[in-house]
Image (cartoon, rainbow, N blue to C red; front, side, top):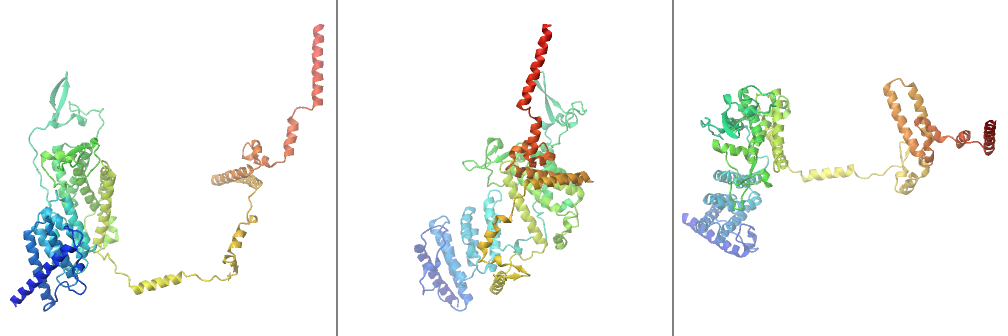
Amino acid sequence: MATLDIELAQAMTYRLQELLERAKHVKKATTVDPALPVSELVGEDELLLSDAVGDKETHKSIVERAARNIFYDILASTPIDHPAFVQIWNLLDILQYCGDRDQCYSGLVLLLVEELLDSQSIDGCRIVFDFLESRREVLIATNSKNKDLVILRSCNELLRRLSRAEDAVFCGRVYIFLFQSFPLGDKSSVNLRGEFHVENVTTFEVSAQTSEKAEDRMDVDVGGEAEAVTAPDGVREEDGIAKSGAPDQNVKEKPQTLDTDTLYPIFWSLQHAFSNPVRLFSEENFNDFKKGLEATLAKFKEVPKVIQAPSPEGKRGVKRKLDDGYDEFASTFNPKYLTSRDLFKLELSDLAFQRHILVQALILIDFILSLTEKSKKKPYQVNAQKALQYSFTLSEQDTEWASGIKNSIANYLQEGPDGKFYYRMVDTVLSRDKNWVRWKMENCQPIIRDRVSTADFLEAKSGAQKAYSSRKVRSTLAGLDLRFLSDSESASGLERLKDLDRYVVPSAESFAEAVAGIELDMDLAMTEQEKENLGEAKTSKTWRALRIASKDKLSLFDRIEDSKSLERLFQPDTVDDTAAEESAPTAPEGRDAVLQEQQRAEGDKRAEGVK
């Protein structure tokens, strides 16, 4: 029996080698893409692999043994960057085609890819991952449940090999591949019990350095010479304290910022709260956290900002100040925290480092804000599983502080290069994370709904058509004549609507009469509100009257002094003529009598002069 299995395995090996030879003519490229069109390797009546010998499981094991023999031979003799290595990709495509048709194990391709990842360097793994990304939809299309364990195991093993500092982009590719390979509601990636990653411990130096610091000394210029004077009791002059120790009344008090050495242990102690937020349920720890975060944010605002920029040669560590006009904020280098005191001052000025810390703070603040009394009364909080319910409730004072520091961090993150875009991205991720937490609290209800059956769809479609189908309008409805809505009379009905007799422009006299009536009502009004309403109505109608009268009485507008004289626009012209005659000069006969009287008076004056 063993001899027969060996012969069958050899025959299957020859068959796979024959298919690989044909693949060289079908696929000319020596790269991962495009995929091998396996269906073109054989004719219409030819089988891809020989008929099953014995039961189906025996046949599958024979195919696996033959495939592994070829796989190991090529892997041992050909490096992954060699053009001949395309035979591995062609072999995997053939096995995937057979697995979809139940001629071999469906997970055989992923098992071989897992061994291929273990045998390659990080650079080689990138090429292997190109194959996984390009064939992802085909790999998970059928029998994906049997492949989940292999995908998880191979990706997690690859992530353990990768450096989060130097291979951050590759790590992201692996995570994206996992997210796309599993359903959105799959519980394999859900932390159901809400456990925190307390194993992620950040170690730092606890004891302060004993060397004398330059910050504890001040330079005083006396007579043009620099003289070092030590501040009394370790107090600095710039903090508003004079050399004598008395407070300076002229110095405005400013927010205190700690020096680098003092801030060092306070800053790194924040990582304890970030990795284990339940520590903040203790009042002492929470007060320490508040002071530490406030001091950190104040220090970030004070120090000059420096961003990392890749050099043209691709070297890391090249930094430029923001004032240099460097616009791009992009670097694939994502270092693990270096907690040395000697590097702490440089890290504080690194804008990327600041953003890493502040985003962690935002995540933690969102967590503690979900523990307020108001938030815990929400239905999904009340009905959440016990592992995600906490007895701690955030006080109103702490809630106000958390909201204030969150706004301060949000405003600060929007500064710097691409700050608006960066904060919008962070805010979007945190908003989605809140929805994810809520989904977990609701015990991970199914996200994907079943497809609507064909019968239900046709029934709903038929009902909608019946509900909105056109119905014949009756000529009379409740005694109303609706014949004007019919199509035959639509044109004549439209013309009747345009008839000039249907509407008329009100006259200016009607508005003037209305204004006069309003004035009488204002004299009888009892309350201020009533007078105000009547005043607004009077103003409106006065404006309308003037607007209509401007078409044919614009020349008479000089008669109007205020709204009370509005009726003068509509008085007959005889009134104005009478008034004009009364005020006009006398007639020609009257003018002659006046002249004669004047001449007689002048003659009298001359006679008196002669006498």
